[in-house]
Length: 262
Image 1 (cartoon, rainbow, N blue to C red):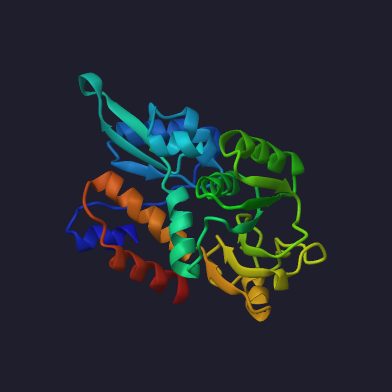
Image 2 (cartoon, rainbow, N blue to C red):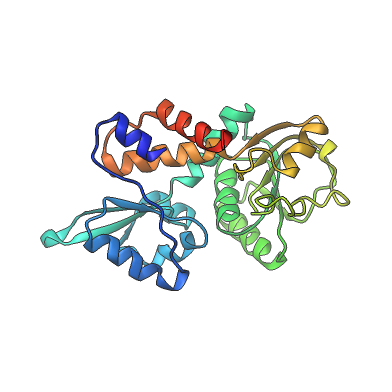
């Protein structure tokens, strides 16, 4: 999507993927800085680690406690500074509104996963004034940490660790379960039935329809995958790096062609 956007705007830039071991992340950021990269995107498991590896945190990264975008810019005495941003949080809620036509204020949400993506989603949903958040994670203590943080920051939002007893407006999968065909579902249907949810959103976008989404569709739920979130966080990152308005339609088309036609 970024290379298609650079081409559309006539920018002589390239977006490339690099596999970096977490223990080498600091060295990789430093290498990108000295090679005059315009910026970086970070994916799991780097988003939380990078918070302590940049020179400055933008308001978005401070607020959500994770960095998925870095911009290298001229600083004091010509030194290049690494500034960390978070474009994921807005990407999640924008996609939920556009792709599911979901009003988040007052919604009851079951969130599966409390890793980096789950934590950001939980805090952002609380900031959007959902009525109640139910947090489910394989390691319960992680969910309890996030619940405590929400209670501190957003006391008006009810938060429970565990499955709900009543219906919900949304199930949001923020785990990586569903990436591989052999994966079990991220939802334990013995504890909670898909028939109790109005809508299901899976952050995974490849495959386009995970087992969870296929089952949700069969149960009559409204469904969407993470393509919209990927697009919106990418649009924001593009604009941070270039200072130009992102060609959103070009980027969406590039994503759809890559993800759905291969």
